[in-house]
Image (cartoon, rainbow, N blue to C red; front, side, top):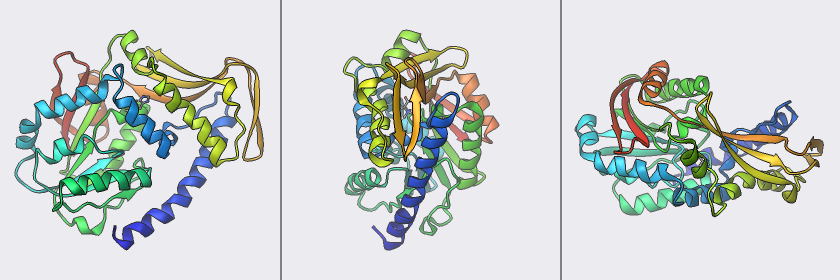
Length: 321
Ligand code: AVJ
């Protein structure tokens, strides 16, 4: 990897650690304890998430992959023959990326992810598959506007935000994020974005509380991470995974619940949870075509075309800034 890119990664790492500490201490001091979902994704968390995507109960990855395969040609035609720089937000293992790269003629690929280590692994796999494609990985929190590496030049930009990651944000924050992406990519850019759809409560809850307990391990890894990185003493035998459907807000919520009264420390500060009290760790908002279009418009993106599956489980929307 180029030296400039390496340095960028190293400086942002300290900033990320400080931000993690701040978010955890603030989140645990609130009346209703809550920690932002982006802190799930250390190396272990990213691995566990990859395992989730292969679970029988977790349909979004499979269904979205099917949609991208089924509509690749149409997506390619709508993007057109100009060489775009593909900017992927929260790239993770970038398993869906080849489906998009194969459908268009990319000029370069810029994956942005919070886990630099994981990013390097997935970039190596992509580089082996596309030896001629320039790849410029950026380790950053994609919720902040980013400066694209100078090397990408003036090619038109195509943002790629699959997986329904937008669902992690509350509507107002989601609109802010879309506006920030518009700023990063520029007016006239395209965005291909995935939304998970509202469906039966049983199916939704099962997708976030699987029989093998992988989602539980993913959620509870956040407590392990706090214990590991922030000198925490959260007792592993006093907490449990919870997934609940909040119908009013059309979202799945994940919580870490205290199964008994517990006391613990983080960074030398004392915290207590009563039995049944929870730390809210994630929201996963679900949409229908109208609410997804409305959100995109609020974020400065004009929906051009939606792509779906036969069972209305998931949708991918192409929009223009
Ligand atoms: C990566 C945010 C889309 O909300 O479905 C999976 C994360 N959490 N299982 C989702 C997740 C629990 C996932 N996103």
